[in-house]
Length: 209
Image (cartoon, rainbow, N blue to C red; front, side):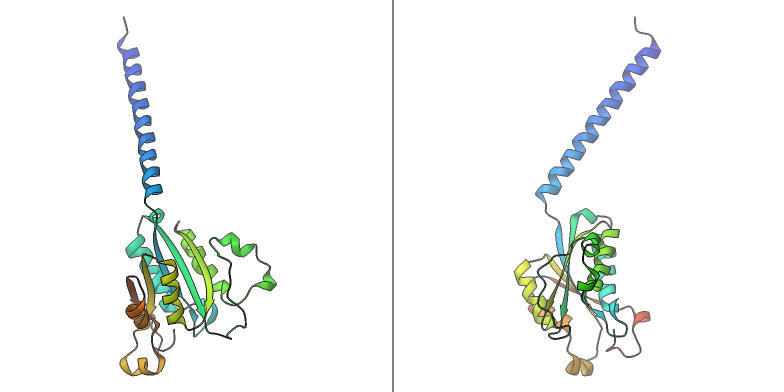
């Protein structure tokens, strides 16, 4: 006859094993769901600060990134993938388009320091920030008119959405400067979210960033 103590131990072992089996089934379900549901791809246009230059990100770019993490990704880092695109104006650095894709901080470390060009440090900043949040990402550089290149890359890669920063320029300033965010909102072939700078971070001259 089984004693009460042995029966309790036997019962607890069964409960523990059943719990382990349930956790294993849950992990299998999560694996199947993640494999069948690819991550939501968000393209983020990034550029350097007009005040501080490379490798410092513009206020608009940094605000757009932070907003996307806080408001869209939240705690579901595994469900998203960021596509960081930096467009440089032709002849700004005198280099051709880059074919390499930079998806982790280690990719930058492996590069020879002498071969690094302006713009890589900017991308490295955002890639490292994304990895700190556990968000997978890719980053690359193109050259051309930023608003047109961004729309071309959206058409090529077909992300789920595009996020761009906005300086919030007034009508008079937009006539002379133009805005990438407005152009993309009208022409990009995907949903577009424009994020304005925080009021307390806006420079004295709003054209600066």
